Length: 237
Ligand code: SF4
Ligand code: FES
Image (cartoon, rainbow, N blue to C red; front, side, top):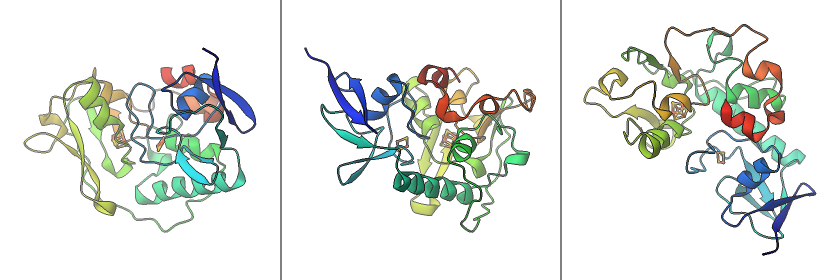
């Protein structure tokens, strides 16, 4: 069978049938920004940060299957601008006060914003006031930082077989909930060994008693911008 490929920003990207555009791009060492995608989980297509342009259409590269001969644009001024707007909206919808967040330096949202050279959040802040759930002995849940990527929902359901998390509500009222009688993480069967404990791209699910363990200068995205990590390095993070 002859190898199939598509063109991404002028580069030929080989793929095996069934792969999405982002999977093939990552395998070929090409960075496409993403937040709600995870190589080990089924794609969800909610953040739209991975959007690329195929012909006249804007498509989420994490849910679009690669096809032979497709011409895909990602590195364009228009797409950079659209993605920056999405990231700015995520910043203002939550309380992403990086200077006081333990995830700073290891956060995919912050690293993506840096990589896009975002200088301000641009839009008015929402300042949500959701309760912080510190009921679990080993983990803290601060949904003021949740970007509703559903990675923890999918990891808990599809990998851990537990359904600890869920998204409820619509539109601006969408929020993350915990599936326990009290709604508290401490009353669920969530455990530190769960996949769901290790997929949050922001500082919403954090282990307790491990804060600020990595010195400034040695945190993941202090080393290099998120766009130059290889797919394998990203997976290991
Ligand atoms: S808690 Fe983290 S992983 Fe879960 S939906 Fe929110 S941002 Fe995503
Ligand atoms: S990474 Fe594709 S929509 Fe979020």
